[in-house]
Length: 114
Length: 115
View 1 (cartoon, rainbow over the protein chains, first blue to last red):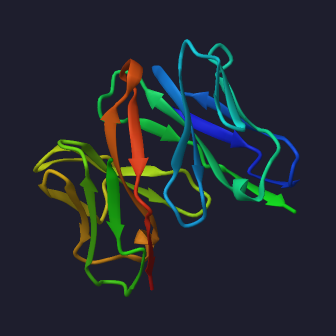
View 2: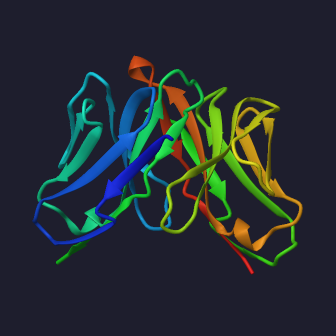
């Protein structure tokens, strides 16, 4: 069964600190892995997209890693800001689909406190 | 630039009432369009997708239906809402990106409460 599992479910950190969110997947055939940021009551916004051959991708203070062998990904946030408070969703795309066949994780809720 | 509009932002409806959520995309033509539902604490679930006018595919059997009367308009409907239809509904559109990966863009969502 195609699944994406994220940990932790929620996380509280102090402003300025770093944090790392985890994503494990059992999706086949694998095409790509994405990280989205979703503010409360809003639609998700794409942070990174990585294919099988990529093992790291950065977007400002966000750095995603991918280990396709162990089927794990992480999202590292550096020097957190209050605006980083949101839900972070790991999404894995299925290969061979031209209709955006994506498997969504349940998300990690991050709260950054001053 | 492309934009996606989704409305209303919030909706409270009684059980058994009809539903119509609308989504429109600007700045692109012949996009793939999607309706997702997000239950509290759960991952997004794909409800419907459309690759063209009048072409609708349903991912999950349910009390809802979708229609695409125009190229950039996608409508989610129900004749009679159930309590279980409550949730956060997201419209999205996609375009083929680099290396064959689709880039997915979401609307701002509709919070539906069925009472």
